[in-house]
Image 1 (tube, rainbow, N blue to C red):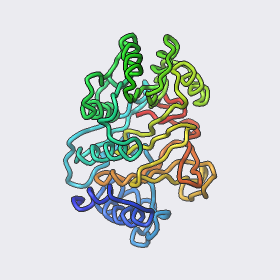
Image 2 (cartoon, rainbow, N blue to C red; image 1 turned 60 degrees about the vertical axis):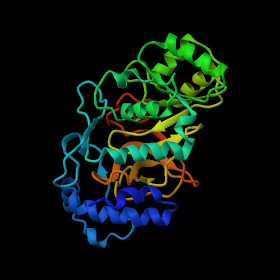
Image 3 (cartoon, rainbow, N blue to C red; image 1 turned 180 degrees about the vertical axis):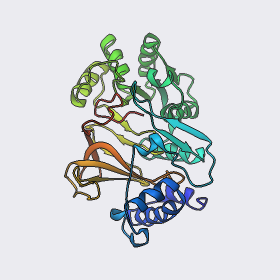
Length: 329
C-alpha cells in the first residue's frame, strides 16, 4: 500500500509537495487505519471533502494508550513504548516497517547536522536504558554504530568515565555529540566543569521524577556555564512519532521537510490558529505512513514566521511524563 510513498516522502523539497503527499496519505489512512477511520466517522466528517491539510482531523495522542494504531491487516515488526509515570498508562506505537523509522531518523539527523560519521556519539540516557521499548534508544544505538568511532557508546551511571572521554575528545578536537536526558546532564554539570569547544550538548526527555522540575531557560544556563558550550541543543520526539525536530539553541525547534507543526485553539481543537499564536501542538509526521500521520499532542506551543516552533508546556491535567517542558519518549 505504501511502497511508492515510503521513499518519496523523504524527497519532499517544498510546502506544495508536502501538502500533496499529506493529502494523499490522509486519503489512504482514513480508509485503512481502523481506529483513525472510526474516529473520523464519529466526528461525522466527510473525508471526501477534505482538500486542504488544515481540514484534516488530528487523532488525539491518548488513542495510542488504549488502541492498536496500525494499518488494517498489518503485522508489527517493533513496538515502541513511552516511559510514562508510575500509575499512568503508557503509549504503544506498533511499527510495521522499521526501515521507515531508520530512514526518518537517519535522514533527519543528516538534514540538520550532516554525516554521523563525522561525530563521536556519547549517550547519557540512564532512564531509557533501564527499560525496554524506547524509540530513542533504538535511534541512538544506530547513531553510535554508524558513527564507527571507537569511543562512541552508552553511559549508564559511569559519569567519571564519561568525563574523561569528554576531556580527551575535546583535547584532540574531535567533533562530538553528547546526547543526554536532562537530569543526567545536570548531574554531570554539578560534578564537573568543562570547556567543550568541539562538543554539541543535546538534551532530550526531562527529569523523570529524579529532580524538581526547572524551566528550560534555567537548565540551559546551568549547562552552558558548567559544560563550557555556547548553547544547548534539544531533540523533540515522542513514542507516537517516527520523526524528530531539533533545536540548535534558544529552544526554537525546526522540523525536517516531511514533518510539520500546526497550532490549534486550546478551547476548540478543530480550529487552527495563525502563526505566532500559542495553542496546542498538532503534528503531521509523514513517516507515520503505517499508523497515523496526524497527531494531536498535549503539548502547548507556537509557530514562528520562519517555520520554527517553541514548546511552551503541557496542557493542565495531562500526563507530565517527567519532562521539563520538553516531550519525553
